[in-house]
Length: 316
Image (cartoon, rainbow, N blue to C red; front, side, top):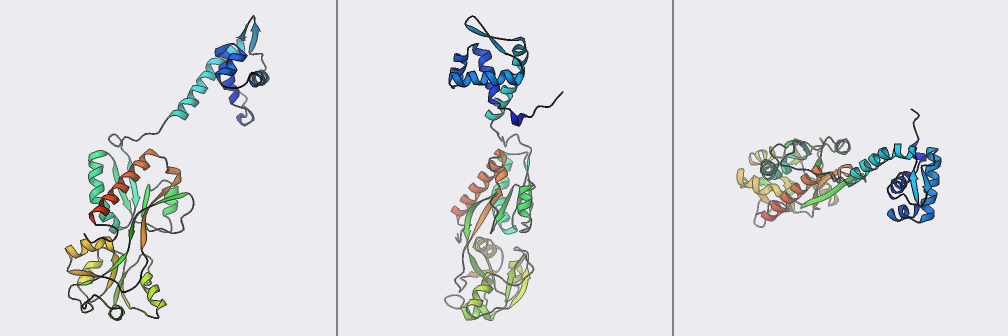
C-alpha cells in the first residue's frame, strides 16, 4: 500500500466529508460545522480531487454518496472518533489504586522534615505507592528530571533552565550552633570577635571549605578557621556537642538539634542573606496528574510545617 503524506493534506477535509455524509446537503453540511456554503463547496472539490471520485452526486434535492464514499465513510468516522476521544480524554491519577513509584531528590535535613508527614499520607491515600529518595546532585539533577528518572527535586537551586519549573516552598536563614556552655556565648549572644576567634565546622557537598559566611567575612577583612568540613547534616550536632567548634545550620533544624543534643543556638553576628527552599520539576511533567498530586501533597506538608514553626526560621 502506498503511504500518503498526511502533512500535505488538510485533515479538516475529513470533517467536511463526515458532515456531507450525514446531511446529504452542501448547505446543511456547512451549517453543521459552522462554515460558509462556498467553503463547503470548495472542500467538496478538494475531497473529489483527493479521492479521485465524485463522492457525492446530486440526485433530486439530495447529495447522495457514491460507492466510494460509502466504502470510506465508516473508516473516516472511526478515525475522527478516535481523534475526538484522544483530545477529550483527561489524564487522571487515583492514588488509592495507583502502584506508582515516586522518586524525590532532596537533602537529608529537608527529608527529615517532610517524611514524618509524607509517609502517613501515602499510607492513607496511596497505599500501593512507593517512595525513593536520592541525594541532590547539582550537576545532574536537571538531566534526571528531563529523563523522568526523578519526579521532583527539593532544595536550593540557581540558574535553572527555562524548561524546569520552580516553586519556592519556604524561605530559610542560617542560625549559629555550639555546645551548651560554649565560652563564645556571652551576655547578648556571640560577638563577631568571638565568632571568628573559635574554629568552625562547615557543611558542604562540594569538598571545599568556603561558604557564604566566609564570603561575608572576607568583605570585612575577616577570616575564620574551618577546622572540619562535613557532608552530613545529622552528624554535625554530635560533632558540635563534643567540641568547641561553631557552625551554621538552617533554622528549620534548630528545634530538632537542641531537643536531642546538648547544643544551643545563637544569632550569627553577620548580615547573611536568606534563601529559598524550592520544589522543581520538568515542564514536560507540568500537567501530569500523578506529578500534580505529589506536588500538591508536598506543598501542603510544607505549609503545615511552616504553621507549626518548624520552617521559615521559627523556633516553635
